[in-house]
Image (cartoon, rainbow, N blue to C red; front, side, top):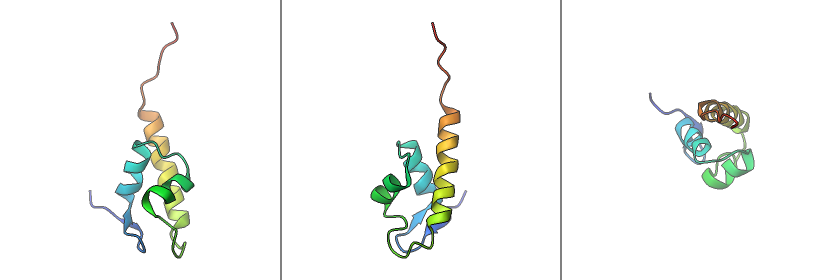
Length: 69
């Protein structure tokens, strides 16, 4: 699947955002710190937030469920 640019100012793609979620990013502020996403003009903020939220949900759902002993 080809990457789609979310933040043109800093060349951050949807793949970059999903990778950040897999690496433990759980907030938009963390995403900005790690990638620079939306720290210039801010036009991409809503798309970046939506992509991050979706990626976090996917990562969370993919984790194995631990059974209490």
